[in-house]
Image (cartoon, rainbow, N blue to C red; front, top):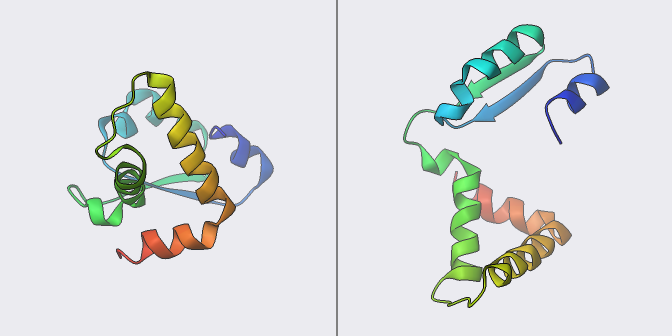
Length: 103
């Protein structure tokens, strides 16, 4: 999904929570935000991985999928990560419980 989809489907304000990656402060993004006043970016404090749920997800992937495993071919990494993500999508409550317990 890109940013235009939720902007087309609703007239309400949209808040996106982001880390402080340089790409999230790019001039093209600022131009996009100028055109779409309903979209508001909320930035996490710098150096706050415990607030960034994506960091917890990557840690989980490393622990369950790629830690201490040698993959002969790149496609095998993609295959194992894909299976992992399908398991997560099948049980969203487990994901919420695991990632939000960090907060």
